Length: 205
Length: 312
Image 1 (cartoon, rainbow over the protein chains, first blue to last red):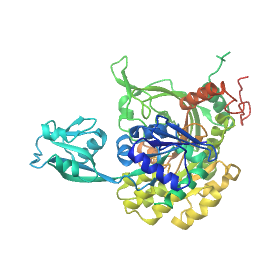
Image 2 (image 1 turned 90 degrees about the vertical axis):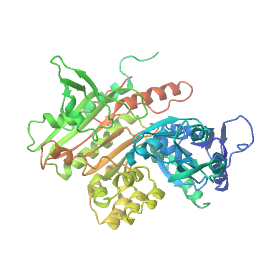
Image 3 (image 1 turned 30 degrees about the vertical axis):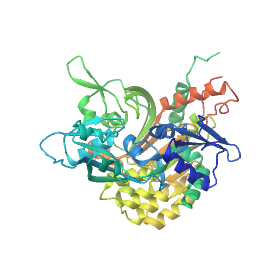
């Protein structure tokens, strides 16, 4: 049995459609119900929806053999897993954004609001910049508008939300998209099926 | 009725001890503690950056060992010929994804001195046999890679490239503009028969030719360059071992001549590995718990060495 963890939500649905096109279908998985686990006995596969942020945990600990996770989450959690494929869906970028009138004063500690404290921390550590990280769970655009932070480190897809809140991108620094990941041990012992899945998913880029 | 005589990891440790002594390795026991400073400047070698310290009776800052290899190298009396040691100790680390220190049961061997290809072969053979000994009939794999070969191909941007190699992240490597050989190395995986000729084609390297001396174990040995240990310390063969059903690598090791020379033993080779028996024990008790609900997760223990011990 091969266990697959998919991120619940829009990205996960896009990824599932790639799997379905590649011939890995799970009946009823896109219906709006509260069921989380779906099995295809003929394929000998089981697929389950988990919180996007938790996909690497399921895969690293081997509960799922493979999974799909956004690169943002992989960068944030640095799980010890294989990153086998760029699935090419959910493309966006990690960026630093600030108010239109923001001027950086290098001698002052920069207040950074983000949902990704490790990514933000690493980015500014490389720049040698002293920062104060404020971890938030969403609606980051509010932070600079209300003066909670100087900048935000966040995912930017089109930039519309930023513009509507009078924010601008200061710098893009990472390309993101959904990635196929695998548990390192599972990869050794389920190599044939995992490489077959990779081959078929690649065919539908 | 639970069996309280030996836990799975204790049984495994005893079986490994008899395996290593059958091969002529002598038992190394740590009875003292090292100073904190001894470990502090070798943190890259240690898997965890955290070191558990205490103040000794004379006021010195000491450490509970995070590792055994460093102490064996430090206390080695002579580097004449080849010295072979095995150990069975507790080490103290903060494991990946854990918040606090854990006591980890670790068994392993070190082979130090003027090593020949036969010594390298023997250590690799013992690594495979160690996996067999504790696998209880489950499948196991030893992934073998070569730190020196990787170092010779990767110069600039080393950390990013090594991270991608460890992740089998081909799309990441391509975006880093690495030489074609590095991508070919990342894509190369398979049994020694199929991988060694390809490796020679890609790099002209004979670095892993010692694997052809291990034909008997070719079913379990896999050439795979996603095993990347610190290039500062390791210079030769590096490897990691996996057992089916255990989600993380349970055995890891390699040749660390660079570490030997950093610790004052110039031109002396060192090679060894450690088995993480705590990880093994956790999963062994889990599979025992699962087997209550159905058929046993795996057949009864089968030991390959002479004088193996069984829990009836």
